[in-house]
Length: 414
Ligand code: HAM
Image 1: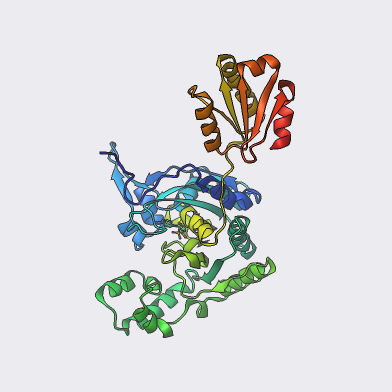
Image 2: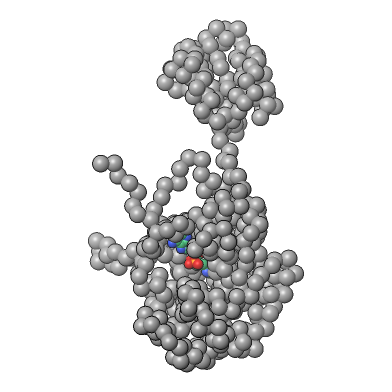
């Protein structure tokens, strides 16, 4: 039996744009003072239970939790924010300059039902700006994701924006919504969700329920003065930055820590799993995991869905591969090739060599398959004459190049 990757996981294979997309999405953040961090892939289970929230599907149904040999309950991280804020608190990063600006990338784990764009091990890139409440910072954070998508060439990402209020205005709204929901004809499962968190019912996509929710009270209409001002300022900054947003009063995120600015990036070419990213402010998260009051805002973008979005928009993601392939014919040529390849690589030219002494035909086939632009074909007699044959693998023409000019000629032709 040949093993297969576990359900809901996949292999990143040669030719994938994975790395380019991962780094491309984070490039604007890297240019804006967001330093790279990498918290561990597993943490104390309690961190996520308290940080992400006991009422969320993520914590209730989707965590990969295990007991280690020391009897500790650990969980593969379902998301990055709780771990990043834990790291900030543990290392006292918030005692320095604020906001603490951080970026990260890596695998997250959720035991969801796999489908197109939904995996059990998936990759996120994210940023977190911790320590300040400032609507201009919210706009910067949102802009960084927007720029990340645009520098990949995506033009059909939409930004949905709302405010989830704060502990001053949300409880009253929550009670009003619960009262409204109590008057509806809901099935038992939905009633149970409403009891846990009535806001989550707003997120139910079933048309029949959505129709009943048409007259539901909206949080955006019940924001307190401070939240309303903050929300308006964020929108003004976004407009000034030329970032188009759609207000989405029914937007509910799957994690409990959000308050005030909350947003999602969606792409219509992806089917049911249309969210390519999401985030928001989490001013209470630090306290819920035992820290001091420490506001924050951030986002995470899904790599798999971003790759699907690139596909849906027909954006080619060809990866830079080899530039030069060296074909030695004979033992002196082979010895020369080994050191020449090392030298070319040392000069930043992506180079490989035909290993295995397969003869001219086999080696030239390998050269063609390598994807390289140029082949250096060299026999023992060529070396005696002080030349090599340089072949353009796309055009096909071949020229003899003196050994002394090889480096310059290759550089000139690439
Ligand atoms: P999230 O909305 O749960 O937010 O995840 C962010 C993105 O990760 C989603 O929009 C989606 O693209 C991708 N994603 C989530 N689950 C899956 C899955 N099962 N398969 C494939 N992709 C998936 C967070 O995780 C927050 N930590 C974001 C944040 C950072 N909020 C504040 N700071």
